[in-house]
Length: 81
Image (cartoon, rainbow, N blue to C red; front, side, top):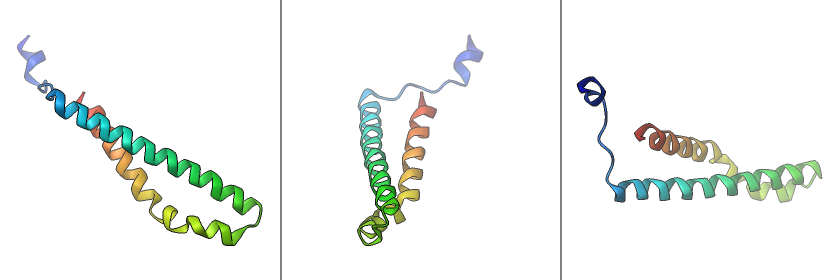
């Protein structure tokens, strides 16, 4: 029994778990919006509407950082369970 308990983490307080869950849900929403923007961009590029596609430039230049933050948040939450 001592070996099982020895390496175990204590459960997080409920308020902290709820805050983590809310942050992950908000991050999911941002990634979903990013996905929608990517689909719109690809559609515009396929139609050779380059000028309209440029409106997505700023949003997509930071996409990699946004995705990394999301993955970091998700993995941290999973790691705590």
